[in-house]
Amino acid sequence: MLPHNGRVEAQPITFKLHDASAGYAVSPHRIPLEALKGFADEVTDFLRGEGSRQDGGRVEVSVVAGSLGLETESLSDPGLFADLRRLGVDERLDGIGPRRRGVLEKWQARARRAPQVRFEIASPALAEPLVISAATDYRTQAADQWVRVERYVQGEVEEVGGSDRVNAHIRLAGGERLKVDTERSVLRDDRVNRLYKTSMVRISAEYNVTTRQHRNARLIEFVDYTPKFDESEFERLTAVGRQAWKDVPNPSAWVDALRGHGE
Image 1 (spheres, helix red, strand yellow):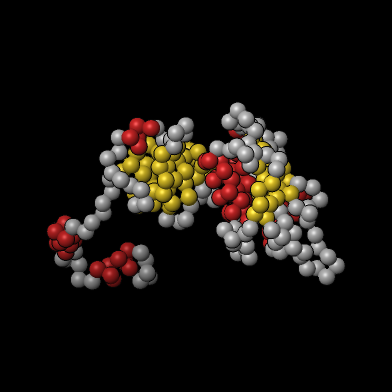
Image 2: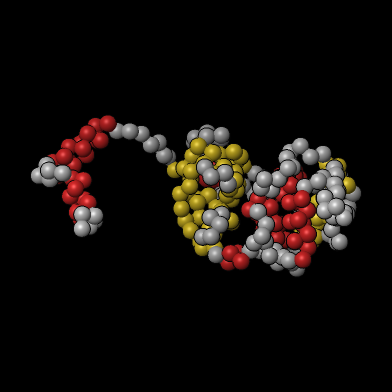
């Protein structure tokens, strides 16, 4: 809430995960490890945002009853609370920074896939909790700019495996952390230890042509990619080029003339 002097009063924020998709309602007493880790990472990203004062990794939290709830200490972050208030009146995400927007889009997609899942964000600074569920529609105007692609991407493999759902986590050069589902055989038959190493992978995914983000990615195969400089091939190509241009006294002037720069 904003007092009369316009300064933001420090307030706690509570993030709650309601999830019965595993056949039981998650709680502080029982929750799949992957769900706990994913929720904690997402809360961290949401708190951190872009240019935020908060380092999500340093915020103290307490586990609260009622599904799985994480409550922060009192925070004073004008940008964070401004985003929360905006979300309370408008489900469009265009005015929200990419990191927080990514978390909300992920939660909205998950809630649509599994109606037993919903997320809540509550704080004394809000008139009522924000709820992300199968009934809500948090999205950007660019949300429909998705195309199905098959492409090669390069990044550091951070995690591989899984029991019920086999996947790999790849940190791309631009910083995007891409989770790709795959067949068990792709990982089983791979003879190279790729963990914490840069690899080239072939994936299929939905790609947003506006935000350049991927979703619903699937790993097709690891690609052997060992770029190296072949000096003999370079010399061969140089010789071919030199022969092709031997009758042109000034190659730069010739190219400029073709481009019309001399007119």
